[in-house]
Length: 263
Image 1 (cartoon, rainbow, N blue to C red):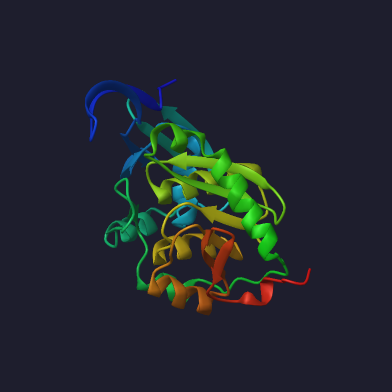
Image 2 (spheres, helix red, strand yellow):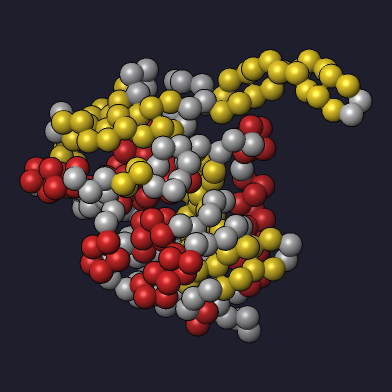
């Protein structure tokens, strides 16, 4: 198993002078995803649960749709490669390669989304209700769970939750990767998403909004801000978008009918 942190020496400068110290930094490495032996994409990531990352990425991009399509998955951590043997449309893969987009995310975020995605994505339908207290409590638990962040301050986090508890939690140098690891785990376990909340530590951009909306997740929450395009897309796609969850406050940008302060 590859270490996900590494000790480095540094000199710390302050008003009191200079001192030598040693600290932990997060490991960054490339991961190349192959589908039916053909190279599809290389992501920069934290080398942990690369199987979840690969499957989550492929699922969120529409390359695979059900676990039955995946015949075999092989992970080589040392080489930084994942081979996925799946029943897919090869012409679809070729078409996707022409619309690859380097996203606004960290960790060399890559997506195959195009303008067509916001048209083809179906509005999210869900009866889920959350209270402000539940969202604030989830974010508090979320931050307490971020052990790798506390150790290195160099990763983003994501979590899939019910209104009352965190079900699964992942960290990565890329905010998109952290979400894809969550989606990959849900893909493998068959976890239903239409009644869940997704938490992220990073900015909510349009591609993050689309990534979660296309999987039917009704509530997307961040301790930071959304972009203007993400707000517009959330409104059109039926997503309750909540940002700036900090200091006992939060901002609900869209579909606040799911936020019930009297529950």
